[in-house]
Length: 164
Image (cartoon, rainbow, N blue to C red):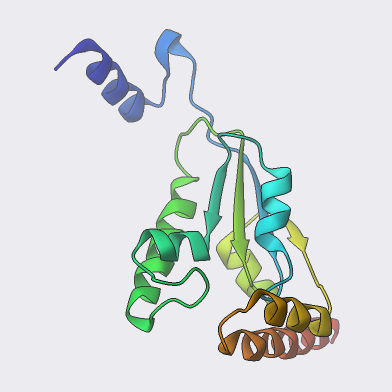
């Protein structure tokens, strides 16, 4: 094995970088959530820095073979979910990231806690009418409006149950 490959392997196994510096085990993790068409991806694009980890359901869907950036075939969805979960779980081990951004709809507080325990949460609660307007203007798939309405129903019900 060549020296660079050996050094990389040793760093992965021991958690140390060249020169004996320990790899980070924490990064600032931010979960950005909200209904479809609320601007989650745009918000992250405006706040993330080059080299930050961005975990985006739609980007993973396209990377795994989805023909459409916002309407992923049902057979791919379990693979998208497992890819997202594997990447977020990897944050628990040694790494050298500055920040990680997780993009999800996550209407329930329990969903947010499961996806990114301990993360800072940015909730883009853009109004239902505005999200529907954006979906129509962007030519989003037909089920997007139903997904927006569903997000708001679930979110409101969750807020009510948390208040009790």
